[in-house]
Length: 222
Ligand code: AMP
Image (cartoon, rainbow, N blue to C red; front, side, top):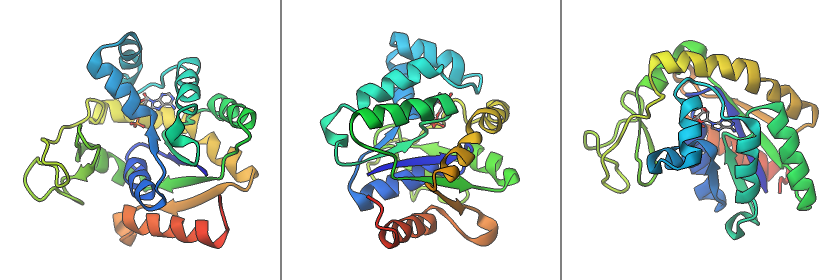
């Protein structure tokens, strides 16, 4: 099974991917997390990625595609993978189709999360993540039990460097220009499942996860 998560920054792709990963027992692979690890370790890739991420821009397609191509060879993702944050451009989507075809695999479904624009910035500036186990919190909607401490592993929570209002604007523009066309790309292939995540209708990550799981079961997605 190959599941792709789509959505603007702040819609909760990471949260829903994490929950789906637990329920379906397949790994969540976040290109953003991989870049952040490289940035922390200050590898050559990390330095390159940082120069784009800090401006709210996408890391170039060739670099990102190569990274995913290698990751797809790993043993742990042969039965299934949840791609959280990849593809983000049509070029990446086409490259992914090609890679999967060569492996006799295909995209099973795309989960497209949408959130009203005015809620997005609030979600992003209040987001805190656990650098150790990758759990995601929101200071307003889903705060940790102990201030700034991860419920799961007890590690101190951090704010992502790009989770500020300034960079968010760039990330949102990038999303509309480069990533949103993927909604149509997958819809045309009948591979799109869209869901709204919004406090205004009381739909959060866990509700959407349940809807996705129901959809997978009902439509015999594999
Ligand atoms: P994320 O954690 O998914 O929000 O990703 C953080 C940042 O990493 C994004 O704003 C991009 O700059 C970069 N990034 C993540 N995935 C990709 C991708 N598929 N293509 C290009 N850049 C990416």
